[in-house]
Length: 388
Ligand SMILES: *Cc1c(COP(=O)(O)O)cnc(C)c1O
Figure 1 (cartoon, rainbow, N blue to C red):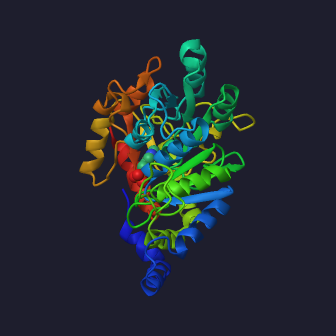
Figure 2: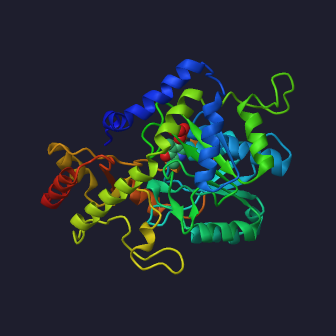
C-alpha cells in the first residue's frame, strides 16, 4: 500500500539533515523543532495556535478534555454528556470520547461519502427534547481525506450551542471550500502516524485551534496538567511531541502539497480508468455536497485521498483476485465501532446504522502511494477491469 522506503529516499537529504541537527543539539524534549513545527502548521492550516502532542489519539483526547475543563469547569465530561460521531472510523475516534468521560452517540453515514451525514446529526438533535440538551459536541471525521460537509455541521452545532472537534487524522492539507480542514471547528486533531499523508518516523500528533485559552490548557495537559512541574492544576498526561518527530515532520512538510497533488493525480487516473464499471462505486460518485459546487466534482473537491476507496458487493472476491495478481488492497474499516465490545453499554446508537454496516462489508481501498508510477496505476486498473 505504501512505499515508505521510497519516500525516505526521495526526501533523504532534508530528513538526514534534520536528524543530524537534533543529534547536535540533544534537546530531545520540547526542543526548538517542536515550536517551529507548531508555528509552521498553524500558518499552513490558517489557525492561531497549534500544539504538538504524542499521537493523533492523544490529540483527540486532549482536545475533548480541554473543552470539558473550559466549558464545564470539570476535569472530565459527565457520563450523561453526549458527543455525536460516526461509527465508521478508526477506534481512536470513539475511544477518545470515552476517555474524556462522555458518551459517543453514533449516527449513520452518507453512503456516497462515507462521512457522517449531517441530516442524521440534525435529526438526532431534534428527535427528543430529553436528549436534546445532553449533546455537548460533534466529532466529524474527514474519512479517507475527504472533507465532511462543514457548512452543515457547523450550522447545526451553532444552532444547538455545541462544539465541533474535527478528526483530521486522514486529511492533512485537505480543505472545505476556502478553509483548510482543522481550521473550521473549535479544534482539529491531526495524526502524524507513519502511514498518514504527513507522517513521522513514529507516533505524533497536533491540535489546531484559534482559541488561546484552549491552546494554553492543551499545553498544560501535555505536561502533566501544570504550567510547571510543581504547580499542577489538572489531571494531565505525558503527551508531548518528540523533538525528533517534529524535526522529521518539519522536513517532510515541505513535500506535503506535492505529495497530496500526486495522490490526486493517481485518484484521477483511477477514476478515469474505472469509470463505467457497473458493479463499482467510485469516490465522488453521486450528487455534489455544498452549495455552488459543480455536480459530480463537488464531493471530491478538497479531498486529499489518504485512501482511494471503492465499493462493491463482491469486495472479498475482488480483494482476493487483486492479491493473486500482486495488487495489495485494504479494508478500512471492516468493523463499525458500535459492534466493538468496548462500546457496548458505553455508547448510544441513534437510529439505523445500516449505511455504516453495509460500507464495512463493501469498501476496498486501492494502493495510493504518492510515488506510484502511471504504469503501476494502469496495471491496477487493468486487473480491476478483468474481474468478473
Ligand atoms: C490514525 C487515526 C487516528 C489516531 O491517530 P494515531 O496517531 O494513530 O493515534 C484517529 N482517527 C482517525 C480517523 C485515524 O485515521
